[in-house]
Image (cartoon, rainbow, N blue to C red; front, side, top):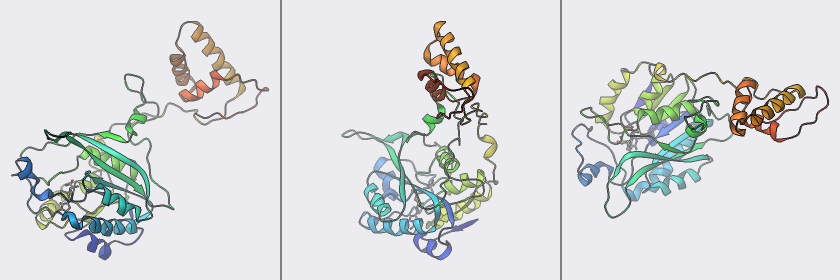
Length: 329
Ligand SMILES: C[S@@+](CC[C@H](N)C(=O)[O-])C[C@H]1O[C@@H](n2cnc3c(N)ncnc32)[C@H](O)[C@@H]1O
């Protein structure tokens, strides 16, 4: 593992080769006097490691340009980068990203609990997560990272669809009495990013390690990790902590994804199958089954997607014997 107690801009130039990193997950300092926020909000920070390094507000545009330029250089073609940002300095991060060749994939909103309490304006309870990729390579996006296509919630909604929406509601972790960094990213948020956007053994880099949360989760999920933290106090403490994480130790905690039941998805449809589905659908709906339930039942029975069944029963296929057609599943 390669962790450096250095400024990430100089460190990346010295230690990271161009096109070498599969995934970058970074949560840069906020440029809002983050090192003094505890006094402002009256937080108890007795367990927070001293020495958090903030970036002065007026230096934020140049600072963002410099580290994001390095991040773009070290990502492999097709590699992904996720940057977490509050709203105050967001424009500078967006400008810096626009000055690279990186392409925007999503602008994710992360909604968390315990927003910053304010009485004269709305309570701030979200961060922005900017998801970009480097062009000209294979992008890793594991669509079934958490849910198979067939998994439904109690209202019949697709769990896979809901998990892939770009608004994430993820609580911050409450760690009473534990030594920590300011504003640690939750393990579940990092698990989500790492499972969707990397594969086992990929190299995951964090330019602002803080509590090494990205590196710890990446290691626990069987990825390799590297990164930078300028604060010696946090670095010296966390470099020992990460040694305690065994490679792949978090894998058994992940839920098992059921086999995809749409076993025939994408296979050509035969005239006989279309005729049978149409006949059964007519019978079911005549007997009072709703259109939606009939499609779901036939989707299960024939191992084809819901939309494929709907497509069949909504059109009048008149096909010569044994002609094959392909419909979209
Ligand atoms: C918002 S925190 C990161 C929190 C981290 N994601 C976590 O979960 O603990 C930003 C971190 O960047 C560090 N930092 C500030 N400037 C830096 C620089 N130029 N290079 C490397 N680290 C820096 C700060 O000391 C701080 O620990």
